[in-house]
Amino acid sequence: MNGAELSVFVSAHVEARTEIRARIHPRENRVVIRLLGAGLCEVGLFTDRPELVRLRDALTDALAELDEQQAAFAAQTPERDSAA
Image (cartoon, rainbow, N blue to C red; front, side, top):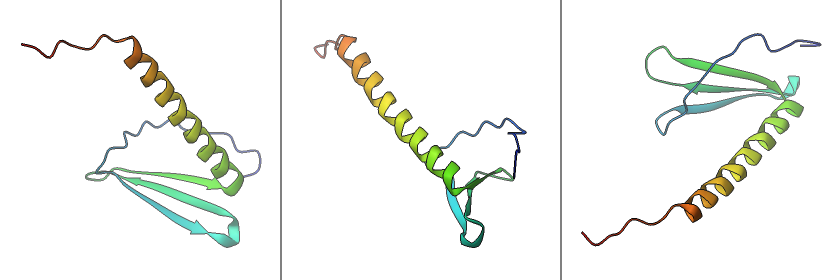
């Protein structure tokens, strides 16, 4: 994949029932992550180890940012009156 650019844009909604499988290719130093949905839906992410590390780090950063923003949102959202 020397010099290859990203060639397609795909949206995938990962839900609790989405299967996530990894196929390891140790001789090629790469992994294929598969997202399997209902019916004929399948998305494959082909990546070498360095890009897999970058993806992991991006997901970790996104999760931390989501947690921070949810905490900030909760802090500024008034609690509903539970007495009805």
